[in-house]
Image 1 (tube, rainbow, N blue to C red):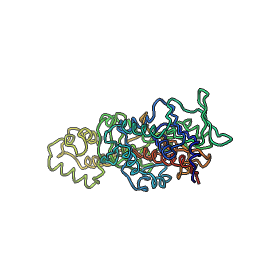
Image 2: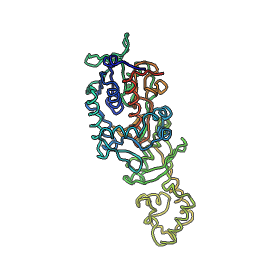
Image 3: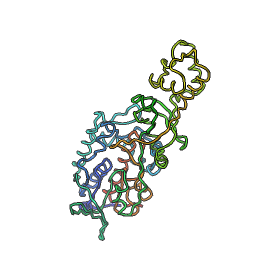
Image 4: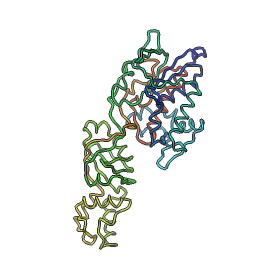
Length: 420
């Protein structure tokens, strides 16, 4: 629908939330409608605080996955809804957007993209500069407590100090609903929240031999939750409290709701050498025995397993420390093969990254048009980012959904499109 320059010049647009999605929407909107008044309210003192800490301060901007269906498969919740949006704005567009503004990104071996400076400040400075250049008003330390629809159309925001702000179009980009109260503005305008549940967390495992190996990583491990019929392959890191690393985080994301229902207590299976089946392991053990019969088994680790991890697995398999390869009985060899291919552990809890963790849950996706990100319940209201019931795997996917939904919302607010 076409909008006259006069209509645009009188349009007041407010965005609540100064994170990645909110700022990206504000820039897109202001550039699409240069005469409009675009204001971003951020309740904290700093814009883009999650961008600043992401990726260890490097900012994992997106992922080198350029086919919409393949990309959407990296979202435990929301992948289907994002299929069409990814046809319009996907990682290739994100890369082009930043490069057009002087920020070059580099692709790492695992597909993650970072600024070539390896600094999140590069991304923050780019977004803030683009917002100010487009005429966006940025207001920190100020977030509305209430929002209501006006009889004459549009919205009125009320602040704790009694201040008010009216607008014709409103975007809520307030971030993940770590608690239901975080989505109360959306709820007050008629929306429903799917209950928030943590995603992307590490597993607590209270096993002394494992906890004593904190800091050891294995490049490729298969971890599975047999009760949930879910398995993941990838790097694993042993911590003081259990297991972490990309494979564990992905497993936690896909199993987020089921694990929450189980109070984060479930059996976990670990295959430390997934590239070797039982027969291959048996042959390799036999070759070790033939090549070095007089050596102690605990002192001859299998690559890529670290020496201390190998020692722990051998001892946990019930093989005494002083056992030499020549003295390994058939029963001991069988137990060792079982331990390497199927270590049984018990999850007893979770650990969240206090600042970076992701939640699943948020505004129900069926209540939003994914063509424009406009509410199907409340015309003139838009929603984007982690406020929606969307969460991606680790690796830049959560930022990509933030850029995509923010861009769609910003463009629609600037052009004046309405949800079908």
